[in-house]
Image 1: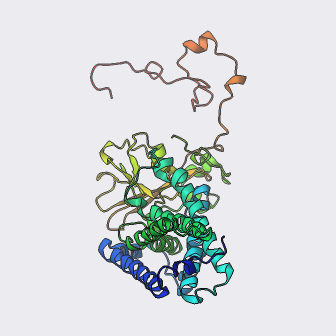
Image 2 (image 1 turned 60 degrees about the vertical axis):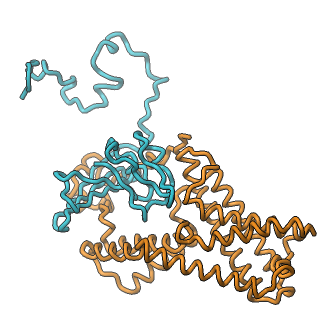
Image 3 (image 1 turned 120 degrees about the vertical axis):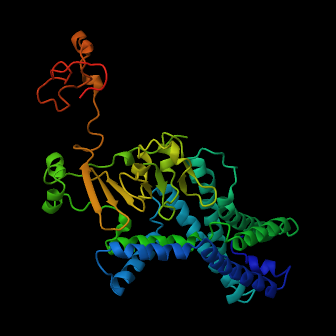
Length: 281
Length: 160
């Protein structure tokens, strides 16, 4: 069932050229939406203005090597492992949806462009299903339990706001895609038309609403993470105070309360607020 | 000093929403990031600032404390047991850092084990001391400071 090629089934209804044209159109919509987002909401302008303002408070000038190091660290930590999330459940859910989406996307591109319709290796079709299943599992976990509106705001799971366009259309794409593929593989081709229509509708909403949805966060969040690393490396620290090593005599001389109350070699105090998980709802 | 959120640092975890006693930290419906919905109702307790794991929440300093265009930023490091503030004037020339301890013992180690403590006597109940006082407060002379012990007396109007 999971080895069946969904694109081959689709080409029984519409020509492959139409499918390829649709995928290219979606790609153009994502690029266009992101550019529009940057220009009209001035996200890029904000980052550059912030970097310019931070120049006066930096304590060292970064070499190109430092900048490459910061970029590689951002890719390896914040991007690859979703380290921005401190809630472990949210981090796992995000990793599932992120890698699931990437696997689903590249498997779709491979099935549409790289292989002849009937001759695609089975592993690519299996990856298509695996990616969709990962997004579906991680996405519904997020939607019902982890989403901050439900977990912290205490609103019911079925309240939908603008911020939900991305997650709902993503979930619709993978869920209806899976249902369509399974019903098709079972031979119920007439019934499979409904999930197919919903799959295409969800995918169209997902890729055409970049300007209004949170789709572009996959470009802006890494940029923000890189910016944070740069500000720590160049000493500007976004105007945050530097705590440093409390056993350093220079720090103790500057802040005499530290040795008076914590001693000359302060111990690790463990977690305070962090020990207590917020469970107010 | 009401709080506000840097949207590019916030990851929408909801810790500030949970902890705010005024219930004014909420989640934005367009970007799913936290924001202070009513700064004029902020008690300035800074609970959200302390609870934010991403250092995404700051305070707006009052004009007499930090002039317009200023920056007041805080970093509370629980494991080191300190809180640090940095106040920067808009011209960047005045840049002050402050740091103070927020605990002297590991967090959670100071919980009183009331089950193991004998019940208070009548004399203790009648005294002005609270539980564990005066041992746990720095009363070097061993007594609570009162007007009488300091040679003062209550007067009408403003006392100096």
